[in-house]
Length: 366
Image (cartoon, rainbow, N blue to C red; front, side, top):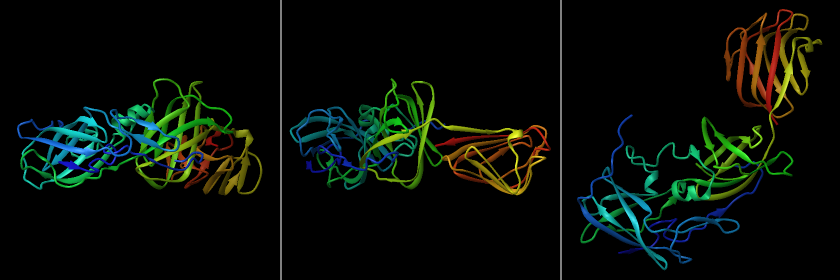
């Protein structure tokens, strides 16, 4: 049986759509595969476009082209059963997938997932944490993370096949990140890149330090994305984007202009003045009332900075008392710490220096 477009990615030499090049974008035992005791399965699929006998992801200028290789594994999931079939041959524009699948009813619903290794054998969907640890190479993305999924129906009379054309759609976006200094004038070779979207971290660890990393990420809409890298010089570099949207099936090329974090420290004797606010080195605290002699900040307040975004605020009241609270705040009466990513950080409560022993340390992402 010949089915056109059985695989959106591999049935034809797929080109990813090119997208923006903007700066800073974007213990239960597992079920084992069913034993081969059922019926033979064969389907011929159209490769389309360029003829290919190998599969990889390769850049073609503004996008990515995908091609097949023999023995790649594909999952057929039907009635709670997971069967594995493989690419048996590639000839011209056609590829044949084959294997032995578990007997099922004619017309049974089938979910098709490529690659087989991406399937969670318990949930029978794509693995939830599949993307959390990557190595930054296009070859690994091609083998593990360029996930496609679609639905069809079984034809079981004679040699089993698929009744309908099945289009597999991309589940993730693919990025090429280039890490540079804040001015964009020089590359930064990194040994690790951590991408934070919401509460989820995606950690990219290349085999060797590099300034170019390929990463697969889930689609997001209007979300903050933070990047933190460890350079080959062992320094930490960061950058962030406040509102990011990217789509599955797209290929994005993005330059990350990164800088080391800024640390601003206020010691007890630095805090002088009058009124209900104090500023130094690009950071300001405003409170309901401030006693500059005693270094007391009372009746709630807010920290702000013009240098970028706070990622950490530490308030140390060695000889005093601190009970500030609110989103992101934690600690005890002698030391309170805020973590997050914002240029303005409110607090509820009071900070008492009692004349000496107060210290503030601000970590800021430029």
